[in-house]
Image (cartoon, rainbow, N blue to C red):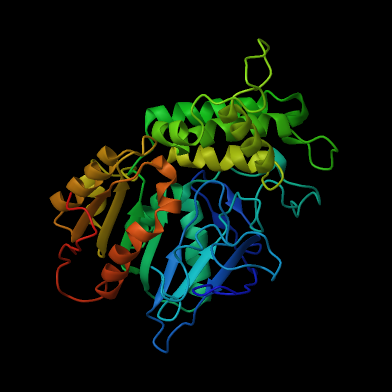
Length: 392
């Protein structure tokens, strides 16, 4: 394995909420038993105070670093951030990541077997919220014997979960690191997600969610949903640099409806490959959970909601992110300051759009490493300055 890698890792599972002790969901329904797939990296220290909980975004999973076998073609989705000497240094910290409920990568979701019927839940699976996902992950943290996390962290939907953790369990994280995210889902993003869901549900092969066991699942609809989503993860500059208006195979237009620009071929490829690893119903459920998210639910304002939090905050946004633009991070930071919370904020320059939180590892590493080392101290966080870091 290359230097800085956590090496070969194994996915584990944890099952809880067995009948009659099923987990009560925000919807009022109950779910159980629940299985969470999770992975851990590094070692938990003797006082169990060095644990970091990493959440994942919509299409992510528990496999955040390392490889599952030596010939694995691709490491975990945040491998550039987790490992010896990296931002989340596994020589110092015990890193945990689990697949969310409603997912399809080992945790209980629509494709899981309903114990009452012996068949996949499909649309019989209850609607879940990000708060429900966080509640399930707290069960995992309890199971691992960790009273307080050093940090909760994540980008996009994962950043929303990190925020939810600090409001729901304010005593159980010393530092919250929400990256490229927002305190509530915007109307624009709700609209975009609905278009993706409609693409899936309009696919005749969706069969009202009862496609499990079919030789023809709704790959066309799921592919279109992913294509729409993937466009929102990129910036206009990224697309111009990588593809421009270049044609894929010809030196002249075909004057047909076939994909012929390189950028068309790219998003088709992204859509098609996504269908090989993700479940259409999980896409519906998780995207809806994101749309439901509003940290002010039950409170009169964002500032009031954040008043209950106890830990410190490191908020990071990226200049070219138009899905969760810096303005939304600034709203969060201003509310935290209004609630007299300990917060520092960085807007990092990037041309990668929303995907910057996945690829701009070098820009984030020094910042995150510094604040992790100061997470438990009583001193107020002071802005870390380095000649290579922006001052905004």
